[in-house]
Image (cartoon, rainbow, N blue to C red):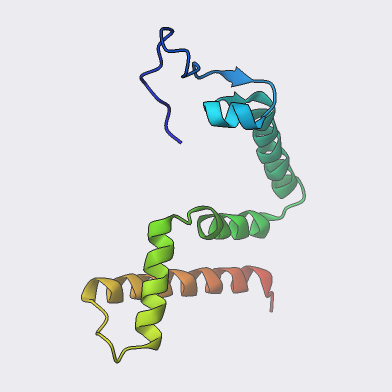
Length: 126
């Protein structure tokens, strides 16, 4: 959601962007930021890193760093590209995979393989 820069006191339909104590449906529609949500985020990040460093769990930090882009960066474009690549992979009779898509698949495979090797070397102590 992007803030509307055309907010003016003369326009009563559009409230000014501001902070609210807690989130409600009306505050979401108005684009207002919840103080409790911001505080919760800061506390959660602090507790997470304290746990990761205090209990010597660096593998947990690495695992979440690798999982975050997969879970958080799911735009409509990336989902569409993933579906397109999967369909191209399963049904190659329709059309050939473009050179650009082959490069994307190759680098995705290399990154996934590298992450798997790194996590295996950390988690699977011989």
